[in-house]
Every structure is written in C-alpha cells, then in structure tokens.
Length: 69
View 1 (cartoon, rainbow, N blue to C red):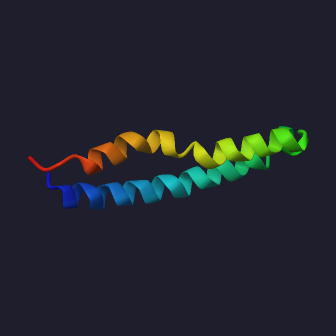
View 2 (view 1 turned 90 degrees about the vertical axis):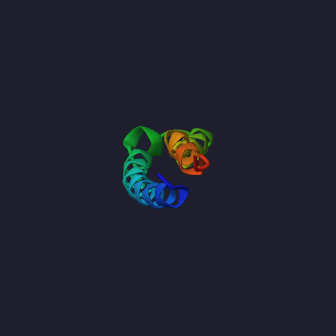
C-alpha cells in the first residue's frame, strides 16, 4: 500500500477516533468524582484526559509514516 493511501485511511480513522474519544473524555470530565475533587486534582485529570488520546494513535501514526517499499 502506498504512503498516500495509508495517510488517507489514517486520517479518516484518526478523525473518527478523536470524535469518539472527545465524547468519552467530556463524559469522564463531567463525572461527579472529578467535579467534586480538589482543583489540583481536576487540573491533573483534565491534563491526562487531554493528552491520553495520543497513546492509542501512535501505532497508527507510525504505520502511516512507514516508507513505501
């Protein structure tokens, strides 16, 4: 598969994943334990939720950037 095709597929998958992940992250951020926590804990939670989407997408990004044979 050519890199151009992999990037196209990867862009569609990443967009779908980020949309679904953002909905889940918003639901988790509005959960009662997070809302009732201390402000420092809330900041840590929001930062973790904001950065956690990168880890599952790293294999996809590596696959997209693989050079053509």
